[in-house]
Image (cartoon, rainbow, N blue to C red):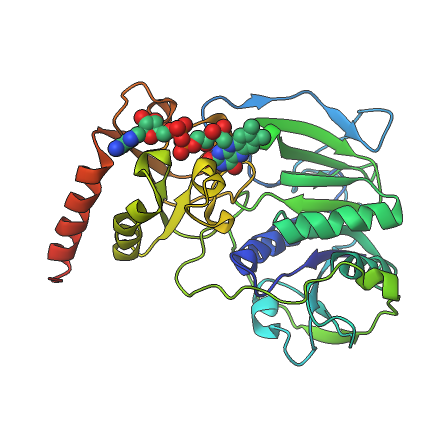
Length: 375
Ligand SMILES: Cc1cc2nc3c(=O)[nH]c(=O)nc-3n(C[C@H](O)[C@H](O)[C@H](O)COP(=O)(O)OP(=O)(O)OC[C@H]3O[C@@H](n4cnc5c(N)ncnc54)[C@H](O)[C@@H]3O)c2cc1C
Protein backbone atom coordinates (compact mmCIF):
# COMPACT_ATOMS: atom_id res chain seq x y z
CA UNK A 1 0.00 0.00 0.00
CA UNK A 2 1.41 3.30 -1.08
CA UNK A 3 0.88 7.04 -0.95
CA UNK A 4 1.82 8.33 -4.39
CA UNK A 5 2.99 11.93 -4.69
CA UNK A 6 3.38 13.87 -7.94
CA UNK A 7 6.63 15.84 -7.89
CA UNK A 8 7.03 18.83 -10.20
CA UNK A 9 10.59 19.77 -10.84
CA UNK A 10 11.00 22.81 -12.97
CA UNK A 11 8.20 25.36 -12.78
CA UNK A 12 8.15 28.53 -10.64
CA UNK A 13 7.83 27.52 -7.03
CA UNK A 14 6.64 24.03 -7.88
CA UNK A 15 9.72 22.19 -6.66
CA UNK A 16 9.36 23.74 -3.21
CA UNK A 17 5.60 23.14 -3.23
CA UNK A 18 6.23 19.52 -4.17
CA UNK A 19 8.67 19.08 -1.27
CA UNK A 20 5.88 20.31 0.98
CA UNK A 21 3.46 17.88 -0.64
CA UNK A 22 5.99 15.09 -0.04
CA UNK A 23 6.19 16.01 3.66
CA UNK A 24 2.38 15.95 3.81
CA UNK A 25 2.30 12.58 1.99
CA UNK A 26 4.95 11.09 4.28
CA UNK A 27 2.89 11.97 7.34
CA UNK A 28 -0.25 10.68 5.67
CA UNK A 29 1.47 7.36 4.95
CA UNK A 30 2.66 7.14 8.55
CA UNK A 31 -0.76 8.00 9.94
CA UNK A 32 -2.39 5.29 7.86
CA UNK A 33 -0.39 2.68 9.76
CA UNK A 34 -2.59 2.88 12.81
CA UNK A 35 -6.28 2.45 13.33
CA UNK A 36 -7.90 5.84 13.32
CA UNK A 37 -4.97 7.83 12.05
CA UNK A 38 -4.12 11.38 12.91
CA UNK A 39 -4.32 14.63 11.10
CA UNK A 40 -1.28 15.64 9.10
CA UNK A 41 -0.47 19.16 8.11
CA UNK A 42 -1.57 22.01 10.28
CA UNK A 43 -4.71 24.05 10.46
CA UNK A 44 -3.51 27.19 8.78
CA UNK A 45 -4.69 30.46 10.25
CA UNK A 46 -5.93 32.22 7.15
CA UNK A 47 -6.34 35.82 8.18
CA UNK A 48 -8.53 36.84 11.02
CA UNK A 49 -11.87 36.11 9.42
CA UNK A 50 -11.55 32.36 9.12
CA UNK A 51 -14.75 30.43 9.37
CA UNK A 52 -14.61 26.71 9.92
CA UNK A 53 -17.37 25.02 8.05
CA UNK A 54 -19.40 22.04 9.06
CA UNK A 55 -18.55 18.52 7.95
CA UNK A 56 -19.04 18.07 4.25
CA UNK A 57 -18.96 14.70 2.59
CA UNK A 58 -17.00 14.61 -0.63
CA UNK A 59 -18.06 11.79 -2.89
CA UNK A 60 -20.37 10.36 -0.29
CA UNK A 61 -23.98 10.56 0.67
CA UNK A 62 -23.16 10.73 4.34
CA UNK A 63 -20.77 12.84 6.34
CA UNK A 64 -20.06 10.50 9.23
CA UNK A 65 -16.28 10.52 9.45
CA UNK A 66 -15.46 7.53 11.57
CA UNK A 67 -12.95 7.73 14.38
CA UNK A 68 -9.97 10.00 14.26
CA UNK A 69 -7.79 8.86 17.12
CA UNK A 70 -4.34 10.36 17.54
CA UNK A 71 -1.31 8.32 16.66
CA UNK A 72 0.07 6.67 19.75
CA UNK A 73 -3.32 5.93 21.19
CA UNK A 74 -3.85 2.62 22.92
CA UNK A 75 -5.58 1.15 19.89
CA UNK A 76 -3.83 -1.69 18.16
CA UNK A 77 -2.20 -0.96 14.85
CA UNK A 78 -4.68 -1.43 12.02
CA UNK A 79 -2.38 -1.81 9.03
CA UNK A 80 1.30 -1.93 8.26
CA UNK A 81 3.02 1.35 7.50
CA UNK A 82 2.39 2.56 3.97
CA UNK A 83 5.28 3.44 1.74
CA UNK A 84 5.83 6.81 0.10
CA UNK A 85 6.36 6.83 -3.64
CA UNK A 86 7.05 9.77 -5.94
CA UNK A 87 6.15 10.29 -9.57
CA UNK A 88 8.36 12.48 -11.73
CA UNK A 89 8.01 13.14 -15.44
CA UNK A 90 11.29 12.71 -17.24
CA UNK A 91 14.06 10.18 -17.52
CA UNK A 92 14.93 7.87 -14.65
CA UNK A 93 18.54 9.02 -14.96
CA UNK A 94 17.45 12.61 -14.37
CA UNK A 95 15.22 11.88 -11.36
CA UNK A 96 16.31 13.84 -8.24
CA UNK A 97 16.88 10.62 -6.30
CA UNK A 98 18.88 12.15 -3.43
CA UNK A 99 16.28 14.85 -2.74
CA UNK A 100 13.47 12.30 -2.91
CA UNK A 101 15.28 9.89 -0.59
CA UNK A 102 15.82 12.73 1.88
CA UNK A 103 12.07 13.29 1.84
CA UNK A 104 11.47 9.64 2.73
CA UNK A 105 10.59 8.33 -0.73
CA UNK A 106 11.27 4.61 -1.13
CA UNK A 107 10.16 4.27 -4.76
CA UNK A 108 10.35 6.89 -7.50
CA UNK A 109 8.54 6.29 -10.77
CA UNK A 110 10.10 8.23 -13.61
CA UNK A 111 7.52 8.48 -16.38
CA UNK A 112 9.40 8.19 -19.65
CA UNK A 113 7.76 8.59 -23.01
CA UNK A 114 8.95 9.77 -26.38
CA UNK A 115 5.57 11.49 -26.69
CA UNK A 116 5.97 13.43 -23.44
CA UNK A 117 8.42 16.19 -24.27
CA UNK A 118 6.62 18.76 -22.12
CA UNK A 119 3.65 19.28 -19.86
CA UNK A 120 0.53 17.43 -21.04
CA UNK A 121 -2.15 17.34 -18.33
CA UNK A 122 -4.34 14.53 -19.70
CA UNK A 123 -1.34 12.34 -20.52
CA UNK A 124 0.14 12.94 -17.06
CA UNK A 125 -3.20 11.97 -15.52
CA UNK A 126 -3.37 8.77 -17.60
CA UNK A 127 0.14 7.88 -16.45
CA UNK A 128 -0.90 8.42 -12.83
CA UNK A 129 -4.03 6.32 -13.36
CA UNK A 130 -1.83 3.43 -14.51
CA UNK A 131 0.55 3.92 -11.61
CA UNK A 132 -2.31 3.63 -9.13
CA UNK A 133 -2.64 -0.02 -10.07
CA UNK A 134 1.11 -0.62 -10.33
CA UNK A 135 1.81 0.77 -6.88
CA UNK A 136 -1.44 -0.24 -5.10
CA UNK A 137 -1.89 3.40 -4.20
CA UNK A 138 -4.32 4.30 -1.43
CA UNK A 139 -3.85 8.03 -2.05
CA UNK A 140 -2.52 10.23 -4.84
CA UNK A 141 -1.22 13.59 -3.65
CA UNK A 142 0.06 16.65 -5.50
CA UNK A 143 0.87 20.21 -4.57
CA UNK A 144 -2.04 22.57 -5.18
CA UNK A 145 -0.16 24.34 -7.94
CA UNK A 146 -1.82 25.11 -11.28
CA UNK A 147 -0.42 21.87 -12.65
CA UNK A 148 -1.09 19.76 -9.57
CA UNK A 149 -4.73 20.80 -9.44
CA UNK A 150 -5.19 20.38 -13.18
CA UNK A 151 -3.61 16.93 -13.39
CA UNK A 152 -5.51 15.56 -10.40
CA UNK A 153 -8.77 16.98 -11.72
CA UNK A 154 -8.16 15.04 -14.95
CA UNK A 155 -7.23 11.98 -12.90
CA UNK A 156 -10.54 12.30 -11.07
CA UNK A 157 -12.40 12.49 -14.38
CA UNK A 158 -10.54 9.48 -15.80
CA UNK A 159 -11.02 7.27 -12.74
CA UNK A 160 -14.42 8.55 -11.62
CA UNK A 161 -12.96 9.36 -8.21
CA UNK A 162 -13.70 12.55 -6.27
CA UNK A 163 -10.79 14.91 -5.77
CA UNK A 164 -10.26 17.28 -2.83
CA UNK A 165 -8.20 20.37 -3.63
CA UNK A 166 -6.21 22.69 -1.38
CA UNK A 167 -6.07 20.45 1.69
CA UNK A 168 -4.34 21.74 4.80
CA UNK A 169 -4.64 18.48 6.75
CA UNK A 170 -5.72 14.90 6.18
CA UNK A 171 -6.20 11.83 8.35
CA UNK A 172 -7.17 8.28 7.43
CA UNK A 173 -10.00 7.15 9.63
CA UNK A 174 -10.55 3.66 11.00
CA UNK A 175 -13.13 2.91 8.32
CA UNK A 176 -10.70 3.72 5.52
CA UNK A 177 -12.06 7.13 4.66
CA UNK A 178 -10.17 10.43 4.85
CA UNK A 179 -10.99 13.29 7.14
CA UNK A 180 -9.80 16.55 5.60
CA UNK A 181 -9.54 20.25 6.19
CA UNK A 182 -9.24 22.28 3.03
CA UNK A 183 -9.35 25.85 1.78
CA UNK A 184 -12.59 26.99 0.20
CA UNK A 185 -13.75 30.36 -1.06
CA UNK A 186 -10.28 31.47 -2.09
CA UNK A 187 -8.90 30.56 1.33
CA UNK A 188 -11.30 32.67 3.41
CA UNK A 189 -13.03 29.52 4.67
CA UNK A 190 -11.66 26.28 6.10
CA UNK A 191 -13.94 23.34 5.40
CA UNK A 192 -14.03 20.07 7.33
CA UNK A 193 -14.79 17.31 4.87
CA UNK A 194 -14.85 13.55 4.61
CA UNK A 195 -13.54 11.93 1.45
CA UNK A 196 -15.20 8.60 0.89
CA UNK A 197 -13.15 7.12 -1.90
CA UNK A 198 -10.12 4.99 -2.53
CA UNK A 199 -7.64 5.95 -3.61
CA UNK A 200 -7.99 9.47 -2.25
CA UNK A 201 -7.04 12.23 -4.69
CA UNK A 202 -5.71 15.22 -2.76
CA UNK A 203 -3.87 18.43 -3.51
CA UNK A 204 -2.02 20.20 -0.71
CA UNK A 205 -2.39 23.95 -0.14
CA UNK A 206 1.07 25.25 -0.95
CA UNK A 207 1.62 26.87 2.45
CA UNK A 208 -0.05 24.15 4.55
CA UNK A 209 3.04 22.32 5.74
CA UNK A 210 6.77 22.90 5.87
CA UNK A 211 9.08 21.09 3.46
CA UNK A 212 10.71 19.06 6.21
CA UNK A 213 12.98 16.11 5.39
CA UNK A 214 12.36 12.63 6.78
CA UNK A 215 13.95 11.81 10.13
CA UNK A 216 15.99 9.17 8.33
CA UNK A 217 16.61 9.28 4.55
CA UNK A 218 15.00 6.36 2.72
CA UNK A 219 16.70 3.74 0.62
CA UNK A 220 15.25 4.66 -2.75
CA UNK A 221 14.65 2.64 -5.91
CA UNK A 222 14.04 4.53 -9.15
CA UNK A 223 11.79 2.75 -11.64
CA UNK A 224 11.48 3.73 -15.29
CA UNK A 225 7.77 3.68 -16.12
CA UNK A 226 6.69 3.81 -19.75
CA UNK A 227 2.90 4.13 -20.04
CA UNK A 228 1.01 3.45 -23.25
CA UNK A 229 -0.33 6.82 -24.28
CA UNK A 230 -2.86 7.48 -27.02
CA UNK A 231 -2.67 10.38 -29.45
CA UNK A 232 -5.76 11.95 -27.89
CA UNK A 233 -3.98 12.05 -24.52
CA UNK A 234 -1.56 14.52 -26.09
CA UNK A 235 -4.24 16.80 -27.55
CA UNK A 236 -3.46 19.37 -24.84
CA UNK A 237 0.24 19.87 -24.24
CA UNK A 238 2.77 22.61 -23.79
CA UNK A 239 4.92 22.97 -26.86
CA UNK A 240 7.07 25.81 -25.58
CA UNK A 241 7.60 27.66 -22.33
CA UNK A 242 8.58 31.20 -21.62
CA UNK A 243 11.89 31.24 -19.80
CA UNK A 244 11.81 32.87 -16.38
CA UNK A 245 14.22 35.78 -16.60
CA UNK A 246 16.18 34.75 -13.54
CA UNK A 247 15.42 36.23 -10.15
CA UNK A 248 13.26 34.91 -7.36
CA UNK A 249 10.03 33.01 -7.92
CA UNK A 250 6.94 34.94 -6.82
CA UNK A 251 5.30 31.86 -5.31
CA UNK A 252 8.19 31.11 -2.95
CA UNK A 253 9.81 34.53 -2.45
CA UNK A 254 10.54 35.44 1.18
CA UNK A 255 9.90 39.11 0.34
CA UNK A 256 7.33 40.38 -2.15
CA UNK A 257 7.02 44.04 -3.13
CA UNK A 258 3.52 44.59 -4.49
CA UNK A 259 2.29 47.36 -6.76
CA UNK A 260 -1.27 48.31 -7.63
CA UNK A 261 -3.17 50.96 -9.54
CA UNK A 262 -1.62 53.56 -7.25
CA UNK A 263 1.70 53.04 -9.03
CA UNK A 264 0.13 55.01 -11.86
CA UNK A 265 1.44 53.25 -14.96
CA UNK A 266 4.02 50.84 -16.36
CA UNK A 267 6.89 53.26 -15.93
CA UNK A 268 6.19 53.53 -12.20
CA UNK A 269 7.36 49.97 -11.45
CA UNK A 270 11.07 50.70 -11.80
CA UNK A 271 11.58 51.78 -8.17
CA UNK A 272 9.48 48.84 -6.92
CA UNK A 273 11.57 46.40 -8.95
CA UNK A 274 14.75 47.93 -7.60
CA UNK A 275 13.42 47.70 -4.06
CA UNK A 276 12.48 44.04 -4.59
CA UNK A 277 16.00 43.37 -5.89
CA UNK A 278 17.64 45.08 -2.92
CA UNK A 279 15.52 42.98 -0.55
CA UNK A 280 16.21 39.75 -2.45
CA UNK A 281 12.54 39.47 -3.27
CA UNK A 282 10.08 39.41 -6.15
CA UNK A 283 7.62 41.89 -7.62
CA UNK A 284 3.89 41.14 -7.37
CA UNK A 285 1.00 43.19 -8.69
CA UNK A 286 -2.77 43.56 -8.48
CA UNK A 287 -5.19 42.53 -11.19
CA UNK A 288 -5.80 46.11 -12.25
CA UNK A 289 -2.14 46.26 -13.17
CA UNK A 290 -2.26 43.14 -15.31
CA UNK A 291 -5.63 44.05 -16.84
CA UNK A 292 -4.16 47.39 -17.90
CA UNK A 293 -1.24 45.56 -19.46
CA UNK A 294 1.26 47.33 -17.22
CA UNK A 295 2.79 44.04 -16.07
CA UNK A 296 2.39 40.36 -17.15
CA UNK A 297 -0.22 38.12 -15.56
CA UNK A 298 2.43 35.84 -14.08
CA UNK A 299 3.16 38.62 -11.57
CA UNK A 300 -0.45 38.90 -10.41
CA UNK A 301 -1.17 38.11 -6.78
CA UNK A 302 -4.65 37.00 -5.79
CA UNK A 303 -7.56 34.69 -6.31
CA UNK A 304 -6.94 34.53 -10.04
CA UNK A 305 -3.19 34.96 -9.75
CA UNK A 306 -0.39 33.53 -7.66
CA UNK A 307 -0.78 32.79 -3.96
CA UNK A 308 2.16 34.01 -1.98
CA UNK A 309 3.34 33.30 1.56
CA UNK A 310 6.39 35.49 2.13
CA UNK A 311 7.83 36.67 5.40
CA UNK A 312 7.12 40.24 4.25
CA UNK A 313 4.59 41.59 1.77
CA UNK A 314 5.07 45.29 1.09
CA UNK A 315 1.86 46.34 -0.68
CA UNK A 316 2.16 49.70 -2.41
CA UNK A 317 -0.82 51.50 -3.95
CA UNK A 318 -3.02 48.43 -3.51
CA UNK A 319 -6.48 48.85 -1.96
CA UNK A 320 -6.72 45.32 -0.56
CA UNK A 321 -9.79 43.94 -2.36
CA UNK A 322 -10.92 40.52 -1.12
CA UNK A 323 -9.74 38.86 -4.34
CA UNK A 324 -6.27 40.32 -3.85
CA UNK A 325 -6.12 39.39 -0.17
CA UNK A 326 -7.01 35.80 -1.08
CA UNK A 327 -3.57 35.55 -2.61
CA UNK A 328 -1.53 37.20 0.13
CA UNK A 329 -3.27 36.43 3.40
CA UNK A 330 -0.64 33.81 4.23
CA UNK A 331 2.08 36.46 4.33
CA UNK A 332 3.68 36.54 7.78
CA UNK A 333 3.81 40.33 7.81
CA UNK A 334 2.02 42.86 5.63
CA UNK A 335 3.22 46.45 5.34
CA UNK A 336 0.98 48.77 3.34
CA UNK A 337 1.93 52.03 1.68
CA UNK A 338 -1.20 53.91 0.75
CA UNK A 339 -2.44 57.49 0.61
CA UNK A 340 -5.84 56.44 1.92
CA UNK A 341 -5.97 55.61 5.65
CA UNK A 342 -9.33 53.92 5.08
CA UNK A 343 -8.17 51.56 2.34
CA UNK A 344 -9.16 47.95 3.24
CA UNK A 345 -5.56 46.77 3.18
CA UNK A 346 -4.76 48.96 6.17
CA UNK A 347 -6.92 46.73 8.38
CA UNK A 348 -4.96 43.66 7.22
CA UNK A 349 -1.55 45.27 7.62
CA UNK A 350 0.84 44.89 10.54
CA UNK A 351 2.26 48.30 9.71
CA UNK A 352 1.00 51.02 7.40
CA UNK A 353 2.66 54.06 5.92
CA UNK A 354 0.01 56.60 5.03
CA UNK A 355 1.70 58.43 2.23
CA UNK A 356 2.56 58.70 -1.44
CA UNK A 357 4.47 55.67 -2.71
CA UNK A 358 6.32 57.99 -5.10
CA UNK A 359 8.03 59.47 -2.07
CA UNK A 360 8.17 56.44 0.24
CA UNK A 361 9.64 53.88 -2.18
CA UNK A 362 12.50 56.04 -3.55
CA UNK A 363 13.40 56.98 0.03
CA UNK A 364 13.53 53.28 0.98
CA UNK A 365 15.62 52.47 -2.07
CA UNK A 366 18.05 55.26 -1.24
CA UNK A 367 18.39 54.06 2.35
CA UNK A 368 18.92 50.43 1.35
CA UNK A 369 21.43 51.35 -1.35
CA UNK A 370 23.36 53.43 1.19
CA UNK A 371 23.34 50.57 3.68
CA UNK A 372 24.59 48.19 1.00
CA UNK A 373 27.37 50.63 0.11
CA UNK A 374 25.95 51.23 -3.36
CA UNK A 375 26.11 54.66 -4.95
C1 LIG B 1 -13.61 37.24 -10.06
C2 LIG B 1 -12.58 38.27 -9.69
C3 LIG B 1 -11.27 37.86 -9.50
C4 LIG B 1 -10.30 38.80 -9.15
N1 LIG B 1 -9.01 38.36 -8.94
C5 LIG B 1 -8.09 39.26 -8.53
C6 LIG B 1 -6.75 38.85 -8.23
O1 LIG B 1 -6.38 37.68 -8.39
N2 LIG B 1 -5.88 39.79 -7.81
C7 LIG B 1 -6.22 41.11 -7.64
O2 LIG B 1 -5.37 41.91 -7.25
N3 LIG B 1 -7.47 41.51 -7.92
C8 LIG B 1 -8.40 40.65 -8.38
N4 LIG B 1 -9.65 41.10 -8.70
C9 LIG B 1 -9.88 42.56 -8.75
C10 LIG B 1 -10.13 43.18 -7.39
O3 LIG B 1 -11.51 43.12 -7.09
C11 LIG B 1 -9.70 44.66 -7.38
O4 LIG B 1 -10.39 45.35 -8.42
C12 LIG B 1 -8.22 44.90 -7.57
O5 LIG B 1 -7.48 44.08 -6.69
C13 LIG B 1 -7.89 46.37 -7.29
O6 LIG B 1 -6.56 46.61 -7.63
P1 LIG B 1 -5.77 47.81 -6.93
O7 LIG B 1 -5.80 47.61 -5.46
O8 LIG B 1 -4.46 47.90 -7.60
O9 LIG B 1 -6.59 49.09 -7.40
P2 LIG B 1 -7.57 50.03 -6.57
O10 LIG B 1 -8.64 49.25 -5.91
O11 LIG B 1 -7.99 51.10 -7.51
O12 LIG B 1 -6.66 50.65 -5.42
C14 LIG B 1 -5.61 51.54 -5.65
C15 LIG B 1 -5.06 51.96 -4.30
O13 LIG B 1 -3.92 52.78 -4.51
C16 LIG B 1 -3.96 53.83 -3.55
N5 LIG B 1 -3.12 54.90 -4.11
C17 LIG B 1 -3.39 55.69 -5.18
N6 LIG B 1 -2.35 56.50 -5.43
C18 LIG B 1 -1.41 56.23 -4.50
C19 LIG B 1 -0.10 56.72 -4.24
N7 LIG B 1 0.47 57.69 -5.01
N8 LIG B 1 0.60 56.22 -3.20
C20 LIG B 1 0.07 55.26 -2.42
N9 LIG B 1 -1.18 54.76 -2.62
C21 LIG B 1 -1.89 55.21 -3.66
C22 LIG B 1 -5.41 54.16 -3.40
O14 LIG B 1 -5.67 54.84 -2.18
C23 LIG B 1 -6.04 52.79 -3.48
O15 LIG B 1 -6.16 52.22 -2.18
C24 LIG B 1 -10.63 40.17 -9.02
C25 LIG B 1 -11.96 40.57 -9.23
C26 LIG B 1 -12.91 39.63 -9.56
C27 LIG B 1 -14.33 40.09 -9.76
